[in-house]
Each structure stands twice: as structure tokens, then as C-alpha cells.
Length: 282
Ligand code: PAF
Image 1 (cartoon, protein in one colour):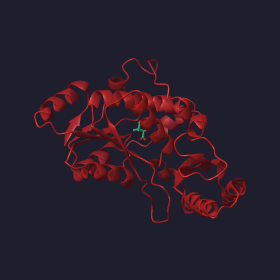
Image 2 (cartoon, rainbow, N blue to C red):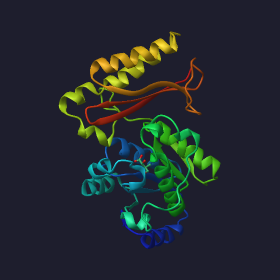
Image 3 (tube, helix red, strand yellow):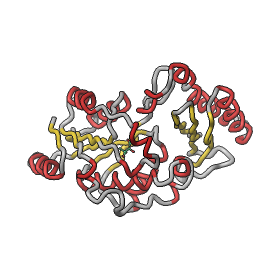
């Protein structure tokens, strides 16, 4: 596994591998790798014919609107590198902040457009502009044929897909289903901040998504279903930010189930903000 820490090393690796003309499959991460990330790697390794696999580790300051959140983001580089080596990837790109952001945080940003206005975009102003900016930059530098993103961050995935479409990036975005603990909790780097009691409560979020999806498919009123889910989450100890039924493409709220719907949810449990979603294809 090649460890690439600056642009010259990345360019050198690209020049070396260009001889084989193998495509690159790219898995962007912010490190603190868990089974969800390794599943993205495994999905990249399942592409045929086999591409080279490059994983990036970069805790992107542009996408944190809260300095405390950035400071406490878990950094576990040694463990991450051991896991990636074991997974058998070809290269890891792990630039320090000043390599990707030599002018600090004051440079050009990608405007992620209307998909970024609501939900996580409303809760975390500037988050998606920062995310899209760094993802665009990584796409330019790495020039992958494929890039893999988890469906857990549904709005992020929608924005990356729209950016690639609207700005004609020559990369195929592969959406990978959310990986879950056996009790249903979506895997996330933030789960480690849950206390034991909160960890026991956390699976209620996905349970409510499933229950709501079942009720909607059974044609219960959208308003009543969403209201009940929010109330049951609040009773379990969550502070619900949103629990909404949306069109899966526009991410706009809908009042009737459509053939391409998604339930989007975010709720605070103690100090941890949990997000999850469930597609409903009827
Ligand atoms: O999902 C993440 O970990 C980040 O938003 C990403 C895609 C690596 C961009 O910094």
C-alpha cells in the first residue's frame, strides 16, 4: 500500500500506475474507519475489471461549521492505515490540511445549489459547500473512474451526484447501501460518542424509519405517520430535528408516497447528532 502525503507523491504514483492503464476506484473518507468504510472498499474491490483502489483520509475543516466539532473529530490514523493495509488497497492519500488548503479556508467554494438548502444543510450552514469543494478537488487530483459513497449520508450523496452531473465530472458515482449494526443502528464515526444508555436507545431511530415506511406503504396519512414517529422518538429521549418524507431526487417534502420516496431523519441523542434514512420504492 503506497502512502501518499503530498501532491508530488500522488502524481508520481499516478504516473507509475498509468503504465497498467488500470482505472482508479476512489473511496473518500475522513478517517476513523469502521466496517462501513471497509464495506465501501470491498464494493470497490468487487468492480470488474479490477480497478486500483485509492482511499483518502482527510478531516476536511471546510465542512465543519463548529470548531469544537472539528477538534473532537476522532483521528485514528495508525488504526486506519492498519485496516487499509489489511484490506489490500493500493494507495492511501492522506494530505495534511495545508496541502489541500494552502490558502487556508478563504478560497473558492463550490455552491452545492438547492439540494443543500434543507435538512443537514439547514442544520449545518456551509457544510455542503465545504464538502463539495473538497470532493471536487479530490476528483480533480485523483481523476478516478469510480467514486464510492455511502447512502447513510443521503443528502451528501445526492449533492455529489448532482455536482458530477451538472459540472460534467468524468467519474461514475457508486451509491453503497448503509451498513448497520445487528440492532439496526447505522454505522458512523460519531457512534463512539454515545454513552452505553444512549447506544441502547439509538437503534430506535432506524426502527421508527421502518415503522413509518410500513405505515406509509399501508397508506396511512403522511402527516399522522410523521407526527407519530417524531413523538415516539421524543418519548425515547431524542431531540428530533427532522423526520420527513421527501422525493428522493429533489429532497423536497412530499405529502403522498411517490414511486421514489425517501424518509430522512436527524435527531440529537445527548451530545450526538444521528442521521439516517430509508428509501421507499412503491
Ligand atoms: O462522508 C465523508 O466522510 C466526507 O463528507 C467526505 C465525503 C470524505 C468529504 O470530506
